[in-house]
Length: 432
Ligand SMILES: NC(=O)c1ccc[n+]([C@@H]2O[C@H](COP(=O)([O-])OP(=O)(O)OC[C@H]3O[C@@H](n4cnc5c(N)ncnc54)[C@H](O)[C@@H]3O)[C@@H](O)[C@H]2O)c1
Ligand SMILES: [Zn+2]
Image (cartoon, rainbow, N blue to C red; front, top):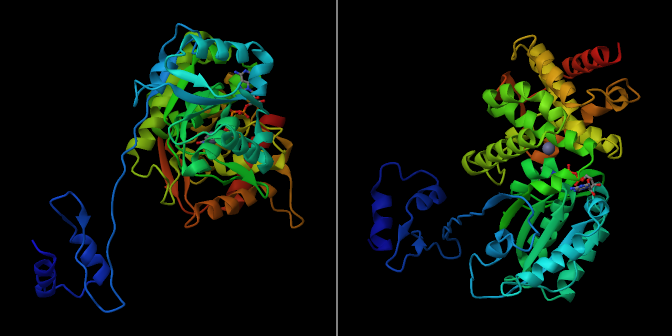
Protein backbone atom coordinates (compact mmCIF):
# COMPACT_ATOMS: atom_id res chain seq x y z
CA UNK A 1 0.00 0.00 0.00
CA UNK A 2 1.38 3.40 -0.92
CA UNK A 3 2.13 5.73 1.92
CA UNK A 4 -0.37 8.23 0.53
CA UNK A 5 -3.20 5.67 0.53
CA UNK A 6 -2.28 4.65 4.03
CA UNK A 7 -2.45 8.21 5.20
CA UNK A 8 -5.90 8.64 3.60
CA UNK A 9 -6.97 5.54 5.44
CA UNK A 10 -5.82 7.01 8.71
CA UNK A 11 -7.65 10.24 8.00
CA UNK A 12 -10.90 8.34 7.39
CA UNK A 13 -10.65 6.49 10.70
CA UNK A 14 -13.14 7.87 13.21
CA UNK A 15 -10.52 7.74 15.99
CA UNK A 16 -8.03 9.71 13.93
CA UNK A 17 -7.94 12.25 16.76
CA UNK A 18 -5.40 10.05 18.56
CA UNK A 19 -2.04 11.80 18.77
CA UNK A 20 -0.48 11.87 15.33
CA UNK A 21 2.77 10.28 16.50
CA UNK A 22 1.01 7.26 17.94
CA UNK A 23 -1.12 6.73 14.83
CA UNK A 24 1.88 6.89 12.57
CA UNK A 25 3.93 4.58 14.76
CA UNK A 26 1.21 1.94 14.57
CA UNK A 27 1.11 2.19 10.79
CA UNK A 28 4.62 0.92 10.14
CA UNK A 29 4.91 -0.79 6.75
CA UNK A 30 7.56 -3.01 5.28
CA UNK A 31 8.75 -2.15 1.79
CA UNK A 32 9.94 -4.73 -0.74
CA UNK A 33 13.58 -4.26 0.26
CA UNK A 34 12.69 -5.08 3.86
CA UNK A 35 13.00 -1.52 5.18
CA UNK A 36 10.42 -0.62 7.77
CA UNK A 37 8.94 2.81 7.14
CA UNK A 38 6.12 4.79 8.56
CA UNK A 39 3.69 7.10 6.84
CA UNK A 40 4.73 10.66 7.00
CA UNK A 41 2.75 13.79 6.75
CA UNK A 42 4.19 16.83 5.16
CA UNK A 43 3.39 19.70 7.43
CA UNK A 44 6.05 21.94 6.06
CA UNK A 45 8.79 22.06 8.67
CA UNK A 46 6.79 19.93 11.06
CA UNK A 47 6.86 16.25 10.12
CA UNK A 48 7.53 12.96 11.81
CA UNK A 49 9.30 9.89 10.43
CA UNK A 50 9.06 7.04 12.88
CA UNK A 51 12.21 4.95 13.25
CA UNK A 52 12.03 1.49 14.74
CA UNK A 53 14.26 -1.55 14.67
CA UNK A 54 15.19 -4.41 16.92
CA UNK A 55 18.58 -5.99 17.44
CA UNK A 56 18.73 -9.54 18.67
CA UNK A 57 21.53 -10.43 21.07
CA UNK A 58 22.81 -13.89 21.71
CA UNK A 59 25.91 -15.09 23.45
CA UNK A 60 27.07 -18.42 24.83
CA UNK A 61 27.77 -19.05 28.51
CA UNK A 62 30.18 -21.98 28.77
CA UNK A 63 30.88 -24.02 31.88
CA UNK A 64 34.26 -25.68 31.66
CA UNK A 65 37.30 -26.64 33.75
CA UNK A 66 40.85 -25.65 32.87
CA UNK A 67 40.02 -22.94 30.31
CA UNK A 68 43.69 -22.16 29.64
CA UNK A 69 44.76 -25.76 29.39
CA UNK A 70 46.25 -25.86 25.85
CA UNK A 71 44.05 -28.82 24.90
CA UNK A 72 40.82 -27.10 25.99
CA UNK A 73 39.14 -25.87 22.78
CA UNK A 74 36.49 -23.64 24.41
CA UNK A 75 38.26 -20.27 24.16
CA UNK A 76 39.71 -20.84 20.67
CA UNK A 77 36.33 -22.05 19.35
CA UNK A 78 34.59 -19.10 20.96
CA UNK A 79 36.93 -16.65 19.22
CA UNK A 80 36.39 -18.39 15.88
CA UNK A 81 32.59 -18.55 16.14
CA UNK A 82 31.83 -15.85 13.58
CA UNK A 83 34.97 -15.96 11.41
CA UNK A 84 36.46 -19.45 11.58
CA UNK A 85 39.18 -18.75 9.03
CA UNK A 86 40.66 -15.75 10.82
CA UNK A 87 43.44 -15.47 13.35
CA UNK A 88 41.86 -13.38 16.08
CA UNK A 89 43.67 -10.56 17.86
CA UNK A 90 43.17 -10.56 21.63
CA UNK A 91 44.06 -8.24 24.48
CA UNK A 92 43.72 -9.77 27.95
CA UNK A 93 43.23 -7.92 31.25
CA UNK A 94 44.02 -9.97 34.35
CA UNK A 95 42.90 -9.47 37.95
CA UNK A 96 45.92 -9.11 40.26
CA UNK A 97 44.09 -10.84 43.13
CA UNK A 98 43.68 -13.89 40.93
CA UNK A 99 47.30 -13.67 39.85
CA UNK A 100 48.40 -13.63 43.49
CA UNK A 101 46.96 -17.12 43.96
CA UNK A 102 47.79 -18.36 40.43
CA UNK A 103 51.12 -16.68 39.69
CA UNK A 104 51.76 -18.80 36.61
CA UNK A 105 48.57 -17.62 34.86
CA UNK A 106 50.33 -15.12 32.58
CA UNK A 107 52.54 -17.90 31.22
CA UNK A 108 49.58 -20.29 31.00
CA UNK A 109 47.64 -17.81 28.84
CA UNK A 110 50.69 -17.22 26.64
CA UNK A 111 51.19 -21.00 26.23
CA UNK A 112 47.50 -21.40 25.36
CA UNK A 113 47.73 -18.71 22.67
CA UNK A 114 50.78 -20.40 21.24
CA UNK A 115 49.08 -23.80 21.17
CA UNK A 116 46.05 -22.22 19.44
CA UNK A 117 48.14 -19.93 17.22
CA UNK A 118 46.05 -20.77 14.16
CA UNK A 119 43.03 -19.11 15.72
CA UNK A 120 44.34 -16.55 18.18
CA UNK A 121 47.08 -14.02 18.64
CA UNK A 122 47.88 -12.15 21.84
CA UNK A 123 48.63 -8.57 20.82
CA UNK A 124 50.50 -8.10 24.12
CA UNK A 125 51.26 -10.00 27.29
CA UNK A 126 48.19 -10.05 29.59
CA UNK A 127 47.89 -6.70 31.35
CA UNK A 128 47.55 -7.00 35.12
CA UNK A 129 45.08 -4.62 36.76
CA UNK A 130 44.15 -4.18 40.42
CA UNK A 131 41.27 -6.49 41.30
CA UNK A 132 38.33 -5.55 43.49
CA UNK A 133 36.44 -2.32 43.98
CA UNK A 134 39.53 -0.11 43.76
CA UNK A 135 39.58 -0.65 40.01
CA UNK A 136 35.99 0.59 39.76
CA UNK A 137 36.56 3.53 42.05
CA UNK A 138 39.18 5.45 40.07
CA UNK A 139 38.44 6.50 36.49
CA UNK A 140 42.17 6.60 35.90
CA UNK A 141 42.14 2.82 35.46
CA UNK A 142 39.44 2.97 32.80
CA UNK A 143 41.52 5.44 30.83
CA UNK A 144 44.64 3.34 31.31
CA UNK A 145 42.84 0.33 29.80
CA UNK A 146 41.42 2.40 26.94
CA UNK A 147 44.92 3.59 26.19
CA UNK A 148 46.06 -0.03 25.97
CA UNK A 149 43.30 -0.71 23.42
CA UNK A 150 44.44 2.33 21.46
CA UNK A 151 48.13 1.41 21.55
CA UNK A 152 47.47 -2.18 20.50
CA UNK A 153 45.06 -1.17 17.70
CA UNK A 154 42.11 -3.12 19.04
CA UNK A 155 39.39 -2.78 16.41
CA UNK A 156 35.77 -3.91 16.31
CA UNK A 157 36.78 -7.38 15.15
CA UNK A 158 39.44 -7.87 17.84
CA UNK A 159 38.69 -9.20 21.30
CA UNK A 160 39.10 -7.76 24.76
CA UNK A 161 39.16 -10.54 27.33
CA UNK A 162 38.64 -9.81 31.02
CA UNK A 163 39.78 -12.49 33.45
CA UNK A 164 38.85 -11.72 37.03
CA UNK A 165 36.22 -10.89 39.60
CA UNK A 166 33.03 -8.91 39.03
CA UNK A 167 34.76 -5.59 39.65
CA UNK A 168 37.38 -6.17 36.95
CA UNK A 169 34.73 -7.48 34.55
CA UNK A 170 32.53 -4.42 35.15
CA UNK A 171 35.42 -2.06 34.41
CA UNK A 172 36.76 -4.01 31.42
CA UNK A 173 33.19 -4.29 30.09
CA UNK A 174 32.83 -0.52 30.20
CA UNK A 175 36.15 -0.07 28.41
CA UNK A 176 35.14 -2.55 25.69
CA UNK A 177 31.67 -1.06 25.29
CA UNK A 178 32.90 2.49 24.87
CA UNK A 179 36.06 2.05 22.80
CA UNK A 180 35.20 2.38 19.11
CA UNK A 181 31.59 2.41 20.42
CA UNK A 182 31.94 -1.25 21.29
CA UNK A 183 34.51 -3.94 20.64
CA UNK A 184 34.03 -7.68 21.14
CA UNK A 185 34.29 -8.57 24.76
CA UNK A 186 34.74 -11.97 26.40
CA UNK A 187 34.26 -12.40 30.12
CA UNK A 188 36.09 -15.00 32.16
CA UNK A 189 34.59 -14.57 35.65
CA UNK A 190 36.75 -15.96 38.43
CA UNK A 191 34.69 -15.50 41.58
CA UNK A 192 31.52 -17.27 42.68
CA UNK A 193 29.60 -14.02 42.50
CA UNK A 194 30.73 -13.17 39.00
CA UNK A 195 30.21 -16.71 37.66
CA UNK A 196 26.67 -16.75 39.01
CA UNK A 197 25.54 -13.25 38.30
CA UNK A 198 27.52 -10.27 37.12
CA UNK A 199 29.56 -12.21 34.57
CA UNK A 200 26.52 -13.66 32.81
CA UNK A 201 24.64 -10.34 32.72
CA UNK A 202 24.59 -7.46 30.26
CA UNK A 203 25.72 -4.59 32.46
CA UNK A 204 29.03 -2.95 33.18
CA UNK A 205 30.09 0.15 35.05
CA UNK A 206 32.36 1.94 37.46
CA UNK A 207 31.73 4.07 40.54
CA UNK A 208 31.85 7.86 40.53
CA UNK A 209 31.06 10.58 43.08
CA UNK A 210 30.82 7.87 45.72
CA UNK A 211 27.96 6.17 43.85
CA UNK A 212 28.11 2.57 42.76
CA UNK A 213 27.96 2.05 39.01
CA UNK A 214 27.26 5.73 38.34
CA UNK A 215 28.94 5.39 34.94
CA UNK A 216 28.20 2.33 32.84
CA UNK A 217 26.39 0.82 29.90
CA UNK A 218 24.23 -2.12 28.94
CA UNK A 219 26.37 -4.12 26.55
CA UNK A 220 25.97 -7.89 26.14
CA UNK A 221 29.32 -9.67 25.96
CA UNK A 222 30.45 -11.79 23.02
CA UNK A 223 30.72 -14.81 25.32
CA UNK A 224 31.06 -15.81 28.96
CA UNK A 225 33.47 -18.59 29.88
CA UNK A 226 33.03 -19.94 33.42
CA UNK A 227 36.03 -21.99 34.54
CA UNK A 228 35.38 -24.09 37.69
CA UNK A 229 39.12 -24.27 38.34
CA UNK A 230 39.24 -20.52 39.02
CA UNK A 231 36.98 -20.98 42.02
CA UNK A 232 39.32 -23.51 43.67
CA UNK A 233 41.87 -20.80 44.44
CA UNK A 234 39.37 -18.27 45.72
CA UNK A 235 39.71 -17.36 49.42
CA UNK A 236 36.93 -18.69 51.68
CA UNK A 237 35.62 -15.19 52.34
CA UNK A 238 34.90 -14.64 48.64
CA UNK A 239 33.41 -18.09 48.16
CA UNK A 240 30.94 -17.31 50.92
CA UNK A 241 30.23 -13.78 49.63
CA UNK A 242 29.35 -15.15 46.19
CA UNK A 243 26.63 -17.38 47.55
CA UNK A 244 24.52 -14.36 48.59
CA UNK A 245 23.31 -13.83 45.01
CA UNK A 246 22.25 -17.48 44.80
CA UNK A 247 20.15 -17.10 47.94
CA UNK A 248 18.74 -13.88 46.52
CA UNK A 249 17.64 -15.29 43.18
CA UNK A 250 16.21 -18.39 44.88
CA UNK A 251 14.18 -16.13 47.19
CA UNK A 252 12.61 -14.09 44.42
CA UNK A 253 12.32 -16.74 41.69
CA UNK A 254 12.67 -20.34 42.74
CA UNK A 255 11.43 -21.83 46.02
CA UNK A 256 12.70 -25.29 45.02
CA UNK A 257 16.20 -23.91 44.59
CA UNK A 258 15.94 -22.31 48.03
CA UNK A 259 14.97 -25.71 49.49
CA UNK A 260 17.93 -27.25 47.63
CA UNK A 261 20.23 -24.63 49.19
CA UNK A 262 18.85 -25.52 52.62
CA UNK A 263 19.36 -29.25 52.06
CA UNK A 264 22.91 -28.69 50.78
CA UNK A 265 23.94 -25.97 53.23
CA UNK A 266 26.44 -28.25 54.98
CA UNK A 267 28.22 -29.15 51.74
CA UNK A 268 28.12 -25.54 50.55
CA UNK A 269 29.55 -24.29 53.85
CA UNK A 270 32.50 -26.62 53.22
CA UNK A 271 32.69 -25.49 49.54
CA UNK A 272 32.17 -29.06 48.40
CA UNK A 273 32.88 -29.13 44.64
CA UNK A 274 29.70 -30.69 43.25
CA UNK A 275 27.43 -28.57 45.45
CA UNK A 276 29.25 -25.37 44.48
CA UNK A 277 29.09 -26.28 40.79
CA UNK A 278 25.33 -26.88 41.01
CA UNK A 279 24.80 -23.62 42.88
CA UNK A 280 26.76 -21.67 40.28
CA UNK A 281 25.06 -23.24 37.30
CA UNK A 282 21.50 -22.95 38.64
CA UNK A 283 22.03 -19.40 39.74
CA UNK A 284 23.54 -18.42 36.37
CA UNK A 285 20.57 -20.05 34.60
CA UNK A 286 18.06 -18.10 36.69
CA UNK A 287 19.86 -14.85 35.98
CA UNK A 288 20.04 -15.60 32.27
CA UNK A 289 16.34 -16.41 32.22
CA UNK A 290 15.50 -13.15 33.96
CA UNK A 291 17.48 -11.15 31.40
CA UNK A 292 16.13 -13.00 28.34
CA UNK A 293 12.55 -13.46 29.45
CA UNK A 294 11.97 -10.81 32.09
CA UNK A 295 10.87 -8.36 29.39
CA UNK A 296 13.31 -5.57 30.26
CA UNK A 297 16.92 -6.69 29.70
CA UNK A 298 18.22 -3.13 29.59
CA UNK A 299 16.20 -2.04 32.60
CA UNK A 300 14.33 0.82 31.00
CA UNK A 301 11.43 0.47 33.44
CA UNK A 302 11.62 1.08 37.16
CA UNK A 303 11.49 -2.55 38.29
CA UNK A 304 14.72 -4.26 39.33
CA UNK A 305 13.69 -7.73 40.50
CA UNK A 306 17.33 -8.84 40.62
CA UNK A 307 18.08 -6.05 43.05
CA UNK A 308 16.20 -7.59 45.96
CA UNK A 309 18.13 -6.65 49.12
CA UNK A 310 20.36 -4.28 47.18
CA UNK A 311 19.13 -0.83 48.18
CA UNK A 312 20.65 -1.33 51.64
CA UNK A 313 23.57 -3.40 50.33
CA UNK A 314 24.86 -0.69 48.00
CA UNK A 315 24.69 1.89 50.77
CA UNK A 316 26.43 -0.40 53.28
CA UNK A 317 29.21 -1.07 50.80
CA UNK A 318 29.77 2.66 50.36
CA UNK A 319 29.46 3.39 54.09
CA UNK A 320 32.10 0.80 54.92
CA UNK A 321 34.27 2.02 52.03
CA UNK A 322 33.95 -1.50 50.62
CA UNK A 323 35.32 -3.25 53.67
CA UNK A 324 32.11 -5.21 53.32
CA UNK A 325 32.23 -7.28 50.13
CA UNK A 326 29.27 -6.86 47.77
CA UNK A 327 27.95 -10.33 48.67
CA UNK A 328 28.39 -9.70 52.40
CA UNK A 329 26.41 -6.48 52.15
CA UNK A 330 23.78 -8.22 50.01
CA UNK A 331 23.31 -10.93 52.66
CA UNK A 332 22.53 -8.21 55.25
CA UNK A 333 20.20 -6.54 52.75
CA UNK A 334 18.36 -9.82 52.10
CA UNK A 335 17.86 -10.39 55.83
CA UNK A 336 16.72 -6.80 56.38
CA UNK A 337 14.18 -6.88 53.55
CA UNK A 338 12.96 -10.33 54.61
CA UNK A 339 12.17 -8.98 58.09
CA UNK A 340 10.65 -5.86 56.53
CA UNK A 341 8.46 -8.10 54.33
CA UNK A 342 7.18 -9.80 57.48
CA UNK A 343 6.60 -6.47 59.25
CA UNK A 344 4.47 -5.22 56.34
CA UNK A 345 2.43 -8.43 56.35
CA UNK A 346 3.68 -9.66 52.96
CA UNK A 347 5.71 -12.64 54.19
CA UNK A 348 4.62 -15.27 56.69
CA UNK A 349 6.26 -14.69 60.09
CA UNK A 350 9.02 -17.19 60.70
CA UNK A 351 10.16 -17.25 57.06
CA UNK A 352 12.60 -14.41 57.73
CA UNK A 353 14.20 -16.53 60.46
CA UNK A 354 14.50 -19.41 57.98
CA UNK A 355 16.27 -17.11 55.52
CA UNK A 356 18.64 -15.77 58.20
CA UNK A 357 19.39 -19.29 59.39
CA UNK A 358 20.42 -20.38 55.87
CA UNK A 359 22.56 -17.29 55.34
CA UNK A 360 24.32 -17.77 58.68
CA UNK A 361 24.81 -21.46 57.98
CA UNK A 362 26.56 -20.52 54.74
CA UNK A 363 28.90 -18.30 56.76
CA UNK A 364 27.38 -14.79 56.55
CA UNK A 365 27.24 -12.27 59.39
CA UNK A 366 23.92 -10.46 59.23
CA UNK A 367 24.87 -7.33 61.07
CA UNK A 368 27.42 -4.59 60.70
CA UNK A 369 27.96 -1.50 62.85
CA UNK A 370 27.23 0.67 59.78
CA UNK A 371 23.59 -0.44 60.03
CA UNK A 372 23.20 1.53 63.21
CA UNK A 373 24.91 4.71 62.07
CA UNK A 374 22.64 7.75 62.49
CA UNK A 375 22.21 11.18 60.96
CA UNK A 376 22.13 14.24 63.25
CA UNK A 377 18.32 13.93 63.34
CA UNK A 378 18.52 10.31 64.53
CA UNK A 379 17.53 8.67 61.23
CA UNK A 380 19.54 5.70 60.04
CA UNK A 381 22.15 6.71 57.46
CA UNK A 382 21.48 3.49 55.51
CA UNK A 383 18.05 4.91 54.59
CA UNK A 384 19.86 7.20 52.17
CA UNK A 385 20.20 4.00 50.16
CA UNK A 386 16.50 4.30 49.29
CA UNK A 387 16.98 7.81 47.93
CA UNK A 388 20.06 6.74 45.95
CA UNK A 389 18.11 3.80 44.59
CA UNK A 390 15.21 5.98 43.47
CA UNK A 391 17.61 8.36 41.81
CA UNK A 392 19.43 5.53 40.06
CA UNK A 393 16.14 4.16 38.71
CA UNK A 394 15.19 7.65 37.65
CA UNK A 395 11.47 7.19 38.17
CA UNK A 396 9.20 5.73 40.72
CA UNK A 397 10.87 3.90 43.61
CA UNK A 398 10.47 0.17 43.02
CA UNK A 399 11.71 -2.26 45.62
CA UNK A 400 11.35 -6.02 45.43
CA UNK A 401 10.18 -7.66 48.65
CA UNK A 402 9.03 -11.21 49.36
CA UNK A 403 5.48 -12.55 49.11
CA UNK A 404 6.80 -16.00 49.95
CA UNK A 405 10.07 -17.84 49.61
CA UNK A 406 10.49 -18.15 45.84
CA UNK A 407 8.23 -15.21 44.94
CA UNK A 408 9.23 -11.57 44.84
CA UNK A 409 6.73 -8.75 44.93
CA UNK A 410 7.22 -5.11 43.99
CA UNK A 411 6.35 -2.18 46.24
CA UNK A 412 6.73 1.52 45.57
CA UNK A 413 7.37 2.87 49.00
CA UNK A 414 9.18 1.84 52.13
CA UNK A 415 8.06 2.88 55.60
CA UNK A 416 11.16 4.28 57.30
CA UNK A 417 9.88 3.45 60.78
CA UNK A 418 9.42 -0.20 59.78
CA UNK A 419 12.90 -0.27 58.21
CA UNK A 420 14.23 1.00 61.56
CA UNK A 421 12.26 -1.78 63.27
CA UNK A 422 13.76 -4.36 60.92
CA UNK A 423 17.25 -3.00 61.71
CA UNK A 424 16.50 -3.24 65.43
CA UNK A 425 15.39 -6.86 64.96
CA UNK A 426 18.58 -7.76 63.11
CA UNK A 427 20.66 -5.99 65.76
CA UNK A 428 18.93 -7.81 68.57
CA UNK A 429 19.10 -11.30 67.05
CA UNK A 430 22.78 -10.89 66.16
CA UNK A 431 24.12 -8.96 69.11
CA UNK A 432 22.20 -10.60 71.98
N1 LIG B 1 27.44 -6.02 36.20
C1 LIG B 1 26.57 -6.60 36.98
O1 LIG B 1 25.48 -6.99 36.57
C2 LIG B 1 26.92 -6.85 38.42
C3 LIG B 1 26.08 -7.62 39.22
C4 LIG B 1 26.47 -7.89 40.53
C5 LIG B 1 27.66 -7.36 41.03
N2 LIG B 1 28.45 -6.61 40.23
C6 LIG B 1 29.71 -6.05 40.73
O2 LIG B 1 30.67 -7.08 40.95
C7 LIG B 1 31.61 -6.61 41.92
C8 LIG B 1 31.89 -7.68 42.94
O3 LIG B 1 32.45 -8.77 42.26
P1 LIG B 1 33.11 -10.03 43.02
O4 LIG B 1 32.27 -10.43 44.15
O5 LIG B 1 33.41 -10.96 41.94
O6 LIG B 1 34.40 -9.44 43.73
P2 LIG B 1 35.65 -8.62 43.24
O7 LIG B 1 35.74 -8.49 41.79
O8 LIG B 1 35.64 -7.36 44.05
O9 LIG B 1 36.85 -9.56 43.72
C9 LIG B 1 37.08 -9.81 45.09
C10 LIG B 1 38.57 -10.09 45.31
O10 LIG B 1 38.91 -11.35 44.79
C11 LIG B 1 40.06 -11.28 43.94
N3 LIG B 1 39.92 -12.41 43.02
C12 LIG B 1 39.22 -12.51 41.88
N4 LIG B 1 39.22 -13.78 41.43
C13 LIG B 1 39.96 -14.50 42.30
C14 LIG B 1 40.33 -15.88 42.39
N5 LIG B 1 39.87 -16.81 41.53
N6 LIG B 1 41.11 -16.28 43.41
C15 LIG B 1 41.53 -15.38 44.34
N7 LIG B 1 41.19 -14.08 44.33
C16 LIG B 1 40.42 -13.64 43.32
C17 LIG B 1 40.02 -9.88 43.41
O11 LIG B 1 41.31 -9.42 43.09
C18 LIG B 1 39.46 -9.10 44.60
O12 LIG B 1 40.49 -8.73 45.48
C19 LIG B 1 31.01 -5.36 42.53
O13 LIG B 1 31.67 -4.24 42.02
C20 LIG B 1 29.57 -5.38 42.07
O14 LIG B 1 29.03 -4.09 41.95
C21 LIG B 1 28.11 -6.34 38.93
ZN1 LIG C 1 24.42 -8.03 43.56
